Length: 106
Image 1 (cartoon, rainbow, N blue to C red):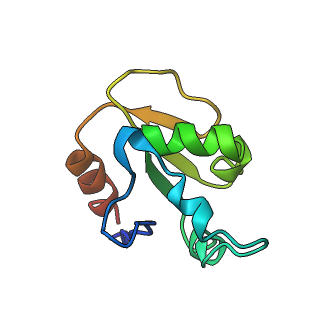
Image 2: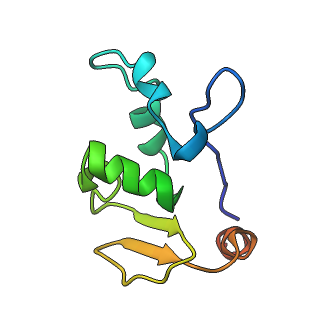
Image 3: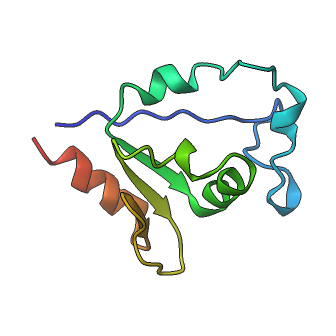
């Protein structure tokens, strides 16, 4: 059975984003060269699942190599079907079904 872990950035009030999907609060605590354990975490995983709005934000702000390094699958949870790009899959099904698919594989 595969292990599922969560790595998430939230504001102090517990939100993932401000109104209008604004993630600018992340820049308030950003320090040059500090990734808050993200690289160490992603080095231990073979598949990444991310929401479409977060994916779009990161692609715009950082670039596609942040997610798609060619070494793991990236599932983007979205309501709008899109073709896969490299190892990035735009998934329109239920998140619970995707997690079940991963955890039922030996």
